[in-house]
Amino acid sequence: MSIFSLLTVVALLIAAVAALVPRAGSRRTDGFAAVWPTGAATILAAAGLSRAIAERLDLAGAVVMVLVVALTLVVQVFADRHLRGDPRARVFFALSALVAAGSTVAVSADSVVLLAAGWSTATFTMLVLIGTGGRGPQTRAAVRRAAVALATGDLALWAAVAVVLATTGSAGFENLTALTGAPAVATGVLVALAAIARAGSFPLHRWLAATAATTTPASALLHAGFVNAGAILVLRFAEVPSIAGPWIVAVAGAVTMLCASVAMLTRPDVKGRLVQSTAAQMGFMLLACGLGAYGVALVHVLGHALFKASLFLGAGSAVERAVAARSRAATPGSRLGAVLGAGVVLVGGGAAMVAGGILTHTAAVLLLFVLATAGVAGGRIGAGRGTIGIRAVLVALVAVAIVGYVLLVVPTAEALAHADAAVPPLFAIAVFVVAGLLAMLTRTHGRAADRLFAFAFAWGRAPLPSPRSAASIAHPTAARGPLEYGRTS
Figure 1 (cartoon, rainbow, N blue to C red):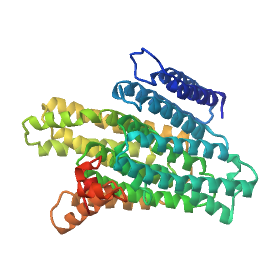
Figure 2 (figure 1 turned 180 degrees about the vertical axis):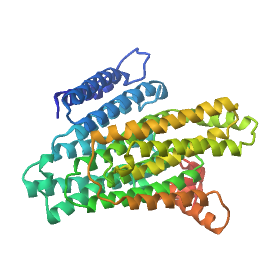
Figure 3 (figure 1 turned 180 degrees about the horizontal axis):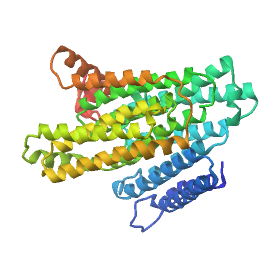
Figure 4 (figure 1 turned 90 degrees about the vertical axis):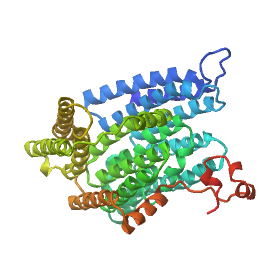
């Protein structure tokens, strides 16, 4: 660890202690004193990033460290009002600082042992943080499911560390290339399992849906920072000479991305939809790592963290926004505008890929998903209610954004972290085709669409708490939590 990483961890530990100190007569929420040391930690992390850029050190770890600490600061400031009067506030501030400290150690570690130690510290504190959502059956189910899945991933990571130490005799990442044969395969598989568990991906995906029961600030930390660590873990072990790990990561990510994208459409609750959105995004991240496009995966992690944190922190007003939107008179969209808007964006993005020579790049196939998303955005803007001039300007801005992403962001990202592709691009193309077919199927009616809905609903539904007491079965309303948790199956 660098000196700035160490100082950042110390500042976060001070924040955890400061949160537990009683403050009589303060107008702030209990535990708010943690904000000031966390702010200092953010400054130290930024200084570490500046040094990493200047000296060309571990840029990926430094960027993720700044992201984790800064988001923790933002969420703590939000919690000052959200948790005012809540007896769990002091515990939340202390645990959020500890989660950030563990994550900082993990992303900035220079040895496999230190990484695993920070990883497990973040896991344990996050489990306790999830448990602050209350004493109802939904929270208990969330803690139980998360504990099983995350403990499985942590044990796999420690097993991988043991294999590395026993085979190479050293804990340094630079010795991972010395792994050969069965130890290399075992390490790759175990690391892939740890990354899948942390990202909430198939087959260890059910714990993530259950965490919608926890508080909004805890959800923001969980979905904006905690689950994103899988990308760093896979990147750190990218030098292991084994294709088993990347294939497992890519397949798990592809399955999760496809299933969670459809499951998101079946969730009627705001946080439930956001949870499935996170799962789908983490699936895309793992797919990118399997293809060796670690830079694109890291950029995606950064964008997802900022975007998802804002959505979770604004979840409380989502209902009011939806009601206001429905109260406005609906006007039919322009089909010609939709076609033109999507066409301009797709042509601009395609031309940028050709002009930038990115078609031979490892991450080129992943741009199919980016271009498709941008094309949908352009089509919706083109079919909007605004004047032709406003719609044209907005479509042009989307086209400029996608061109900038192709020509600037992707090459810069791959300069941060790049590795040879272990999974052929044809796999990602097949995933893209399946995603398109599923998207079209969701807009149809019939037996196939009904079966898809049933599957997606079962995938995205949080697990029922088990066992249920006789009182909650006889009196469903007595069970604390959503009504579905008090019903018999």
